[in-house]
Image (tube, rainbow, N blue to C red; front, side):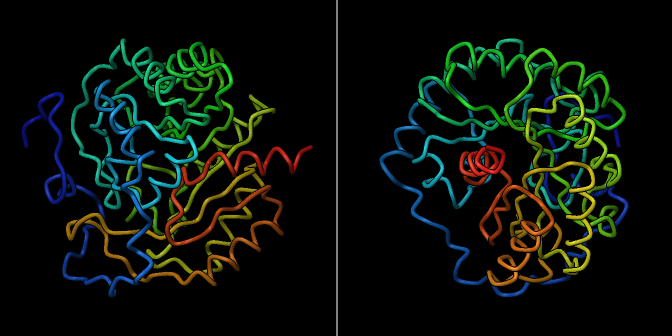
Length: 317
């Protein structure tokens, strides 16, 4: 295959053609349960905020991923933005973001993002990005510039980042974040270690734990957070084991949600996890010492991030 053209992304089967564990597209997912339909996504608040976004030509992950919680979060003044382009240097088979050779970071993006966040009158913003293994600091310097720009225009806002693993560039990334540390640092573990080769090729379970620990050590006042997708074939014991590892690495906040298959080219859903099991895992997480755990089929890693952050604050008052 010839080297990709910068700025052009592969999706679906093309993107997943070269991953180590092939996706079994002959495996059907179980029938979708009723709760999957999500909540009302067409409210005045959502329409107003979408108008602002179009005007500034910016995109939220909330819309790109057709998130079922968009009405709830937009209504409460929370939104998630993806920076550093829409092309990822990795090929994870659970994710619908396109893969390829990304364009250089856009120097104007922090200013544009800050203007939109101010125009949307957000109280809480989550900034995430694709993997940028092509950049010396993994893109962390661009995160810091975005955080600083947002705070300059919206001083009262809370800023959470949901970062890649910065694999091989961790210390450069943490150095870059010194310029403008976030209010919450989120990095998703995604799944249990046994499923990493299949679900997160290119990532390293121990490396992700170390990133959470090292960030917490460097920025002791900033809560750390992570998320797992359930329904990929993990066992309950494995999930609890990950929780123990996370607590041992100082992780404060946890989200647990149901994996949903973006297309038949992606990993199949092995099971739809019942709310009762999410509730039991939440309870277990609180017993292990997380200051808050959001757990439920429609929970995503930024779901009501404002409430999770507030719960952490009360926990430490």
